Amino acid sequence: MSSLQMLSLGTFDYKVTWITCCLGIIVDSSETEIIAVLKRLLYIHNSKDGGTNRVVLTASWYSADIDNNCDLIKAICRRLETGVFLLLGSSSSRSYNIIQSYSHALHVPYVVYSPTTNHESDGYDYDVTVSPSYVRAVVDVIKFFNWDKVYYVFDSDNALWELQRLHDAFSPKGGVIFDGRRVRNLTSSHDFLRQLDRFSTSSSVKRIVLNLSSREAYQRILNQVN
Image (cartoon, rainbow, N blue to C red; front, side):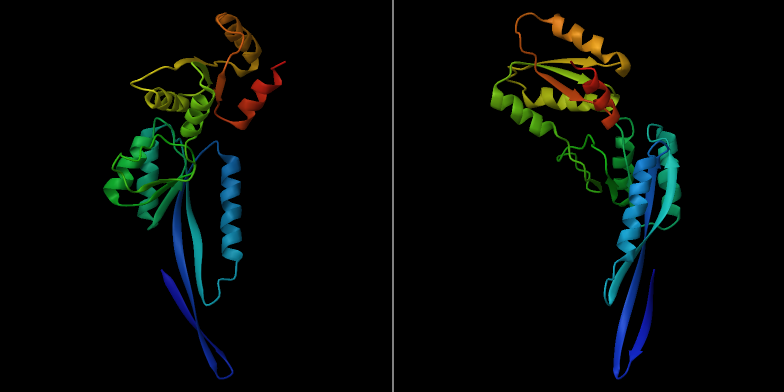
């Protein structure tokens, strides 16, 4: 949708074109901070002076349970009914296949701002991740320091695919043992880490990789480390 206005200034005529583009934004019901950030970004963009050619972004919002595939499918279909040209939202390990399949089948770009399970060789061209996985960085650190065993501590299902990526990075040669441990209760993580420290006596040094679901989860863990 676009609108065209003619401004007459003395003997000069300027054509000023506004192009209005609608984004379909699908957010999880718990992402209150993300919603505030996205609204702020839209406001900043639309407040800028684009000169004679200006793109104005509007948003069609939908709050969904990202882990619920039926709810996510309904959200995708309802946003597309409003005529959006692009979808934006988060994903999870349970829902990412839905995002890939629907965006690919309908030829609609889906920009995901959370880490995903996407592989470059998947053959899906319409899902775009702006928060790349850090798995390659972790692999480089392990190789650089020549670690032979790593404790992988996590608190959500989303971290499992990254653990699988780490395994795949060292296969089939192997050489690195990954001991995955899930934190069930962050408030008692001190006892969990103490048990982890006593679990193996082969080395006084324990290499631990933390993959937690939120900044608050990291802070809870760190606050309990003496």
